[in-house]
Picture 1 (spheres, rainbow, N blue to C red):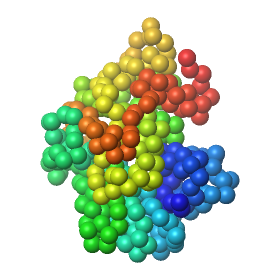
Picture 2 (picture 1 turned 135 degrees about the vertical axis):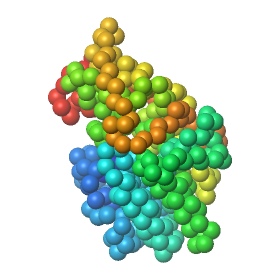
Picture 3 (picture 1 turned 90 degrees about the vertical axis):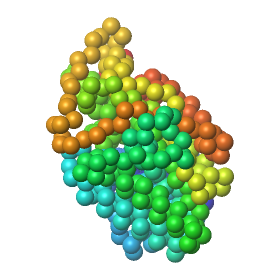
Length: 326
């Protein structure tokens, strides 16, 4: 197939592009390079089946031109939770950008496979999260919910696009992606920051008391689910959780990463960062998926356990800096 991938130079996007090309598809990548980098695509840059276009998803004409003859649009371009910035770009890129994707697909007839997020479950206390559960969103004056709200809008918009125009859509709610090509700041997640600090031998910054838990999914597992959604129709017009059921606290994650970098007998130093340091903030206590639907419809099964995936990620991240790790 010919496939358009938005956010192609980003974390999941660059890994997905490589996998789609490996499977013999031709790929048009679109990225404004605000967070993604050409370095992430260096291994596929010369592939004759790949065409990278530097543009913003909010550019209607650029999107329409990139989507010509594409049977599927994989929509990954997004801004994440605004911790240390305002929420405007998160809302505009995720909201208005998704509208342009929907309009483009309506004109071309392309199927849409879109990245949503586990954040849409909000503060729902029922764990594990299944796709039919309620979203429990917090105080609207807490900007961290801008990301969840923008992705909830995207989900509703794309499902409405299916109802009105007939385009098939698949909405994948990703849980905690990590791995090579991840952003090295908080955009990439706590594991990215912890690895950077550990490589420098500095205290690891943990928000709150670190008791909040997450499930972290190696990028190859995320990519396998996206590719299955692209190539199969079994999950069309549904929301599907994609993640691992392995749960770990953020404090335990920090300790694990430190040991993987410095050895089993080393002692981690934690720097506690109060939520108040970046304004009003509400965190989620636990976040673990029910992946029954992904197993049934996409044949999805996480294959990379956390310690194995972190070792690979540390090796990649250290390689960018010339560090040697155990």
